[in-house]
Length: 364
Image: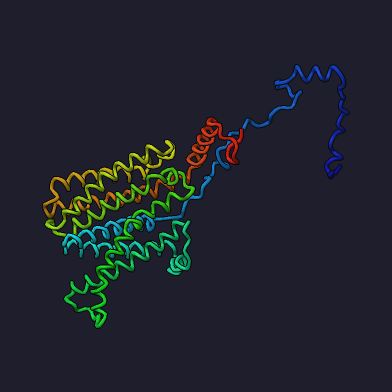
């Protein structure tokens, strides 16, 4: 027993009367639930877990517009790389050249945006020191590098011809001409993974909205990349050679709209909310409007040069807004704990209702 200096001023506490026997047991039975202080009562209400003092459960990723730009430009580069191979096989030289140049510019600017977000270039180099098959970021870094190297070799030949062989390549010129074709095929092989791996990178996290979309987000990103690449070709290439680009753009619009709707139908209803509310909701809504307008315009006036360029710009804008919207929706969902806790409760209740109680997640 410890005493303080103030105990001498405290009046003596009267001795407590102890109750024994039948009277005490009867009092316990009859006073249960009373609020007169004669029985032990709960001093706080039953707690329903939400989060720690309302703080977010999942840490929001510190990603800014640089990452969203990288997501968009990676899709443009991937779609353009695939379009360049189609142009090569069908003998559309202008479309092939412009698609390759567009892919190279997109992957270069996108890579610079990624390095800016990382803070230092050596952080990207360090990701290439090893390869981890279970890490989307590690695999994505190698995909980006392989696509960039292959497309650089293909673009070297294009630039040499575009400048009238004024680039001082010397004896290397023959080697560049020899490897240009295989490099184009190699770039096209890495183009679809480049357009899709960023969706895997986002959905392979604990972020509520991104994780809930993990089954269908790659299809949304690939469709978005297709319409963006088609739109870029419609801006840079005369209409006499853009028929494959227009077809790719229209297919991309259909795939983008359908994949987005299907993705949202398979997500938890609460995790879909960030895609429709606030700034992310506005971005996604305008993305759909621009995609539909660009796709319809491509079908109706895509054979005329200026309207085709306008439609191409609308399609590229739609693709960019999709990437910015998905990124912003995921960050918003991580900031609000209800998007993490409520779906978990529903999944837990569903597992209990299904009788799944033998694992470490669900208990009876």
